[in-house]
Image 1 (cartoon, rainbow, N blue to C red):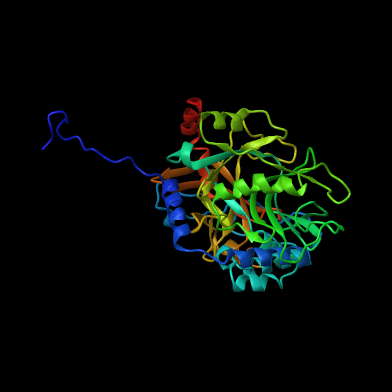
Image 2 (image 1 turned 90 degrees about the vertical axis):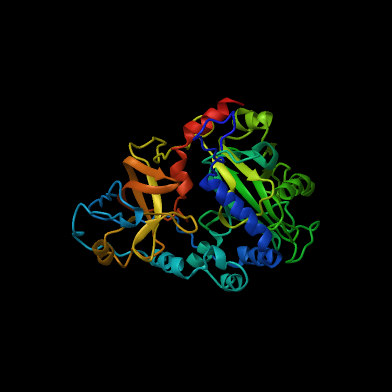
Length: 441
């Protein structure tokens, strides 16, 4: 019976838990239930970074489809019934022959271990990989943030915020007297001497193959510097399974001791900087969002204090961008101009559907079977395809995509290593909510 102060018929409901919050809770639970041999992981990664060869070709892949394929996702239908309708029934002529390296890239995509197979035997296989396979392997060594869709509970107590530098995300490994940086797609950015542990061949620095360092960095073109956003391994000690709170403590206390933050010199070609790390209170958020910085800001990164360094996409690390804190919130062309349509990169699945990088992938549509058969030489499972987002965009009900108005454009450039995440596409739909929260700082 309803009490005297509770109107009859009123149902008291608990606050709903967002889909992203459920993923965060599940990720934290997995951390406590399973741990991997990360010390061996880091040692093999450092040994492999300098021994694996890399091709110098950097040109984007160009699939010259003669006619644009238009993807129509039928509205108001269950997702598993959505289909793609091509403007034309067939492509007039076969795709042109591709270079040998491009064929290697396609083959590598199906032979390189995925995110979950990188432990144990997967690393033994990786030490033997070369060229395209090496690049595919190193492309799977970074932690990737989800885009912020909601405000995590206890944000001010359990999260850090970092102003993200604009530039090239890369993995920096120092070992055997040299330092190498690899981009998100696994390609080598720089070979150089550094003041990092065992990062240069000098008389004053001694080290063995077990003395190595792995840093998660962003290379900032304007001042030719590496800005460190995370520490993965230090002097052979693995930090994969350490909390972000501990990793950030070591990053701030250990990096400067080596001289890596000193100006460039003969045995230290690039200067390293630690990105400012703030608590997510009012003052910290304001400083991260619009405080003065020595670099160009490209959004905010949020880290859960308890988060381990997990390979691949994780909800325990979030990215936030808007027009006030990032020049690159919307897609731009080579001239920096925002196109009339935004684009999304999806991965072709075994069954002919296309989906996001999420695990499991969020399926947005099906490719026409006849079209796949006509282009089976180039369109294989794992291929990254580029789509333009139409006026209807994406429609979400209970956290699940129902409508996806996407138009097939062709293959993604070879600079891309992964498909886009579902959270990236949904982030534009939740901007109003989070901006209201930001206005209350």
